Length: 117
Image (tube, rainbow, N blue to C red; front, side, top):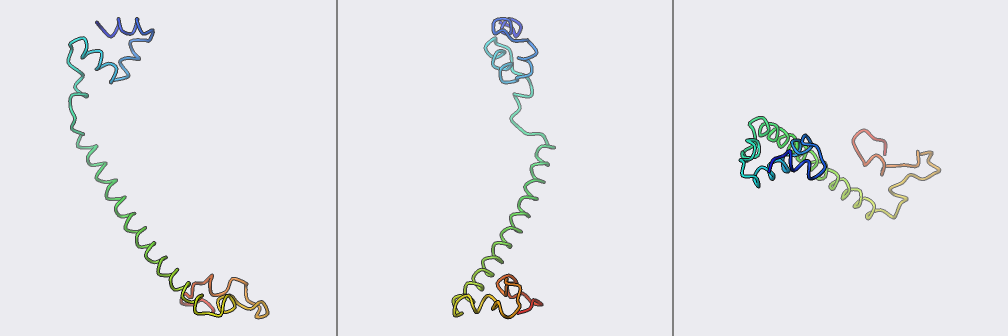
């Protein structure tokens, strides 16, 4: 059995079988030939390992940034929730329409330094 005979029987081109290493190697193993060198080696190349390590470092840094963002937003949410629950309702958190405010009030600003309150 050869790739050529299998290709003819399957109604595909020999180049199709050559492009699909799994098919090619399976046919060769059935025929008693050794699989191609690329399939024998289960070890990734040094460049593939380096690329994977680089991606891992980048993803680890991004994860730290996102965890810090979540921590900050949770603290900000807790502070705003506390301000709301300690108020008489929305009148303490949002400006009175008669005061000429923007309608967004301190809730928008989150009470950050430099924002009008």
